[in-house]
Length: 104
Image 1 (tube, one colour):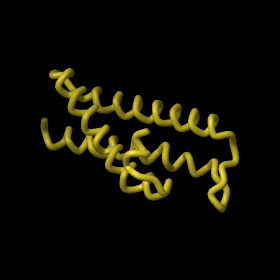
Image 2 (cartoon, rainbow, N blue to C red):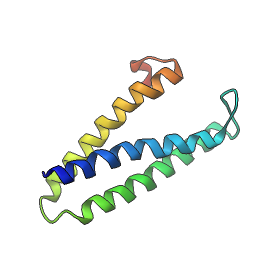
Image 3 (cartoon, rainbow, N blue to C red):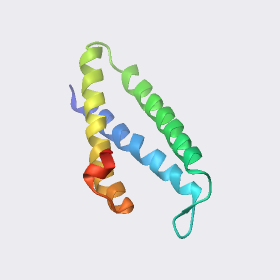
Image 4 (cartoon, one colour):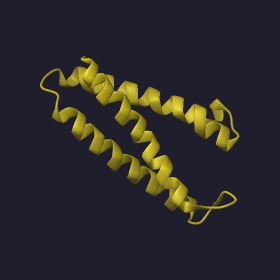
């Protein structure tokens, strides 16, 4: 995997986490109170996350000419790790929870 593809993997992986996180701030008012029902909030985050990931995956695989399976595994695993690391650094402290509770 070339350096260019590695960079094209890490940045979209980070953005696929950041964009839904940033959009979620639109549904909170000062004081950390949700302004819409929790189920709607989760649905919006899932839809925004799916659209974001599809867009970045489309852009990534547009430049891939071969070894699709290898690249799917690399991108999937690396984005998963990026998301777990960012959730551990940002979301778990915000939720005031533990790593075990996060996975539950």
